[in-house]
Amino acid sequence: MEDDHNAVRGRRSSDSDSDDLGQAFSRVPQDLGFEVQVKFRVILSGSVRRLQPLIRDEVYGIGRELLLNAFRHSRASHIEVELEYAPKGFRMVVRDDGCGIDPQVLRAGRDGHRGLPSMRKRAEKIGATLRIWSRAAAGTEAALSVPNSAAFDSRMVED
Image (cartoon, rainbow, N blue to C red; front, side, top):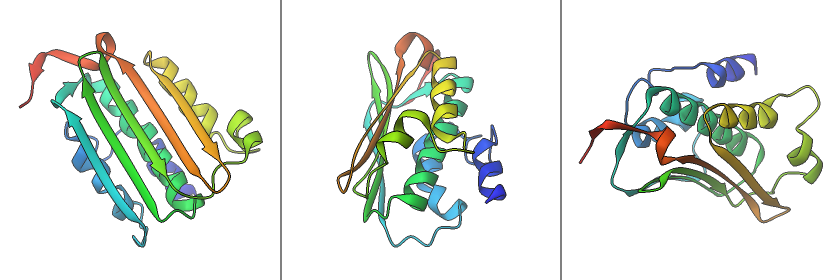
């Protein structure tokens, strides 16, 4: 378990060194050693733009931890990551159709674990908002929104 936490906490992995978050997230299940019996996909929408390096690293770290939690705890049959590059900012949504998160854990986190509170602090640190919705037997959706002014490297646009 400690190896998983170290991997999640790592500011940069070989995947996050790349500017291609879609590819990096598509490799997360294998990188974490999960036998993919879950239908997993990464969805890209909008015109891909290069994120500021710090923003990219934090988005990847938060997204990787959300995926770790989904694969480990949700008992989902479908998990997906949506990366939206929009004129007003960048948005990442991680959703699953699993068992949901206990409302108490969603509010305060799990005793002895820093996962959810840590992700919220990391989002706040980069000027982003992290919202998580969950219902028993209906799954979980986590949306990280980063405003345009913080998200994008205005010097570079990718096709």
